[in-house]
Length: 145
Image (cartoon, rainbow, N blue to C red; front, side, top):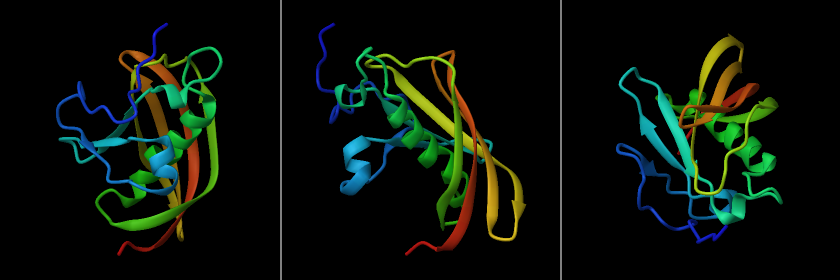
């Protein structure tokens, strides 16, 4: 399989998605990442599987999918509130692989809250294929900036 570098290629990004301005640190290493606000008030985060995301089977590495689950599921807290959060626990079930070049999307929904903790259910997919589902517990922190 010929692999071109999709790391900095914003061509063929689905309508409505905007690139997240994560230009340093971990976001730079795993990105680029994208986000779209949904009509129902929710959100979808996304990325295109590039060569830096691949495992030896030429599928998106589970570590990348875990990282993506973290930023997609946890964003259910900061979306619309501007609150920071930190991950307490993240459980992800891998269901299918995402091949090189796939557009991967994910979202999360708050399903429970107690004090400063939120439980989030999330899912990750590419096209019609469910790639992963999961649950996370996140601690709500201070407001951003």
